[in-house]
Image (cartoon, rainbow, N blue to C red; front, side):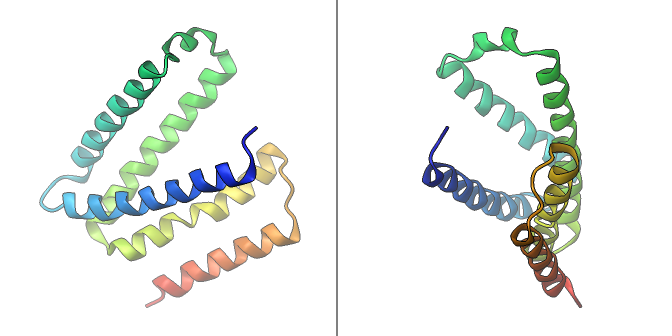
Length: 143
């Protein structure tokens, strides 16, 4: 298992690239259907990720995926696709700073769902963080 600093670095890089995603997407959505833009984005992500998998020699591991792996990866893909479609539609219609903040409200949903489905602990610290995230989201989008 990776040490704390490694996963934190990856999480920070994820957050940084998610921010770039929002900025680039908003710029790229000008005069473009949001569904088409999402399809282009998805195709590029598909090529990049399969390129990485094949380059690293992990392509042969596909046969070792269990039914459970397939089920949850497919459900995750469906959720990702729906998230991207709604996100791009919202970006096209709203301000990127407000849309991205609401999108990050997914953290609150994730905390609750991880407690319900994965039995992860819902400590006072985690609940306080969720409340603060939700409050911050409200402050930023309040008109």
